[in-house]
Amino acid sequence: MKLRHIEIINAVLQTGSVSAAARLLNMTQPSATRHLQHAELTVGYPLFRRHAGRLHPTQELMQLAPAIRNAFASVDDVRRTAASLHGRPQARLRVGTVPSASAIVPAAYDALRRKHPDVRCEFSTGHHHELMQWLLLREIDVAIAFDPPAHPALALEDLATQRLVCAARPEVLGKYRSATSIDATALATMPLIELLNTDPVGRLVGSYGERFEWRFPAPLVVKTHQVALDLAARGLGVAVVDELSASRYRDTLAVLPIEPQSDIVLRAMFLHPGALSVAASSFIGACRATLSAQAAQGASRCPTALPAIHNE
Image (cartoon, helix red, strand yellow):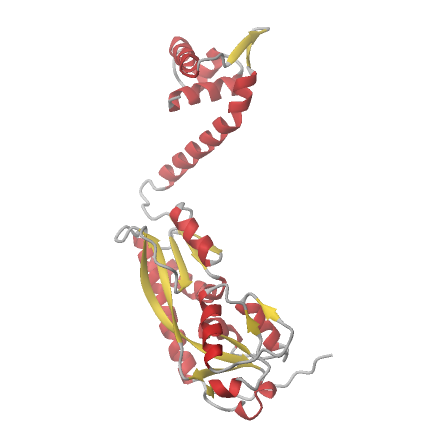
């Protein structure tokens, strides 16, 4: 069936008659009748039966009806988007990030808003495979993730290099509480919180730990960086994560770079190189500037003595 056939069928389903459907679609009744008859010839079976002066859908059409409604919902989305873009070609920006990268969203959005005050932004978080799927389905415009895998339909743009750090309460770090960095071999003797290797940072931590024979003594394994940091904030161990994830906890935890240095790259992903909107390009630039500012701030801060906590 053609889209016009589906449009006529949907209008008759709503109104119950061809004449009312024709008025709804701003067309003549004979034209509406011809389109409906042609739709029935196309599918090869009746779509409506007349009873008491109204048209009632057949069983076959009842099975088609959900798909027709979904089709019209998509058409309505196209119409709304087309209308919203009239005179405002960057009216909407949809961004997805991995949870740990969401820390840069507020500052990057603030910079974008000052430059493009009329842009409507939608932010969501997801894991790497979800972000890639959303991009391929055009459900988001830009994704921010650590070391995403290459894909022929996606372009990657480096934003910043992030190094591994450890984060813990000062009393857990002991003699290293006032250090400016910590050796990986020293961490082997500490109560490390194990991070599942389900994302690039987790895999990096796992491979790095194997080199230095790290042990994870506590019967505790976590999937997300934030949970590892929340546990560390309660004095329950040492979290090894990327420095961006740890940046939110600098007022609560001592955050130390690990030596030898091990890095991971934060990247922006998007469809079709060169097809970014002005707003999307501006947002990526704002993310890069935010990360540079945070790196400078982190480098200027020295570990400070934080108050001890007592678990009940």
